[in-house]
Image (cartoon, rainbow, N blue to C red):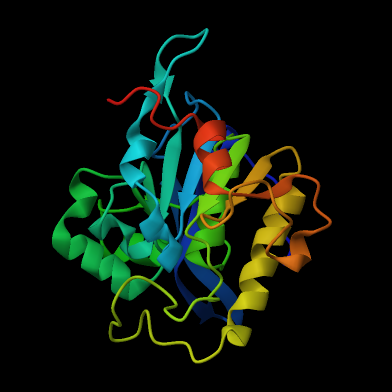
Length: 253
């Protein structure tokens, strides 16, 4: 999977195609310009990307709303990027969802009224005023999409929690819907593209430090994902290192 490097500070918006048809044997499209709606440049350069694997239950997500001190005074421990149905249990700084069925569920709950949800042009056109356009969207799973946006926002340390890659008996935390969160009989169908999408992000944003957090490990360990062994900017860490590196719980809001 090939990606290009961009930063949202340089992003002004983009033209997206609403309808497409042929006129006089020539392709004709009706495009609409969707401007940038979120400015996110003032942050600590630390991001937490929250997946929906079962291991996520071992984390106290409320700590991600904490603060810590330093030479610059009291500041946030970082921004959080969540995926899909996470909003049922926690409100991240930014939620990413491209799944139409889940987007419909988000709209029904009115979560969009007070929270930032990034989605695709299809969801935006269907639900005007509810979602924000994900910059330079490329088809991928929600987890990698959230990691990519964190990098594009300028974060230099990205912690990935709840990224289980379907190794556990329960593949995800949320119940089956009509078309979404369906049971997966084997990890072979989803793991390779999911892992490769993340690897492309690691390669593209090679100046970012990525931490794959595994709660069962007490110390720094070798990569759980063999395909990541050759990337200098990726580390697998345990819960203790995660808490220390991210300075979680230093000061509560």
